[in-house]
Length: 250
Image 1 (cartoon, rainbow, N blue to C red):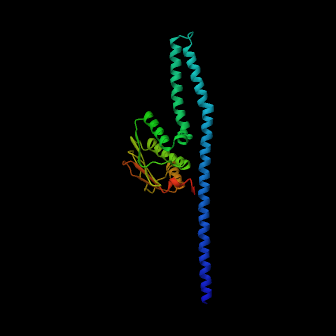
Image 2 (tube, rainbow, N blue to C red):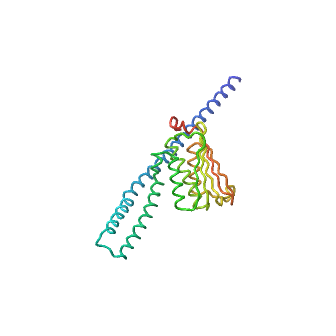
């Protein structure tokens, strides 16, 4: 009788171990699949960026050069024509400015060249130039280089947050803070917009918030979204041992 009970206990123990191992393997496969999906999406963005440069930006830049040649032509001194050319040049310059920003959103070149801080700084500068929104970026602690994959994920999270602040929250001020402490990183993104009631039963998370949650999960981060109507929004993301990720990506 005792032997039967002992055998049953051992069998149950091994079954539990097998379930735990299989569960960990399944979680690992899910993380690997999600990472592959995100990396494929980034490759798609890169491809679109290349096509954007090749088909649109390059042609518009060439058109701008041709118009300048016409403008400088001594045989074409008609004031009405000159005014039309200047208007066309101004329109092309505005379009190129926004195309360059779109191109950088798809494939943030400064991120791979100079790092996350520079890429975010450039994004905030674009916002300040094209709107009345005040933006600030702060670094606290001892800054370190963040691995590339994690930098891309953090940039996309910041990007989605800024889009929400500008397009939906009607924010007038946006603050982004990086807290560096040992191997950990805390990211805080706050705005003074209209906020929303995330606890409301009828609340339906949009694409932006879903993307932020998905990427935070991929980073194995602890995400908190603090907001309520008319009191702005604060997004906090804590990531353990982010600076060791290149050694252990999963």
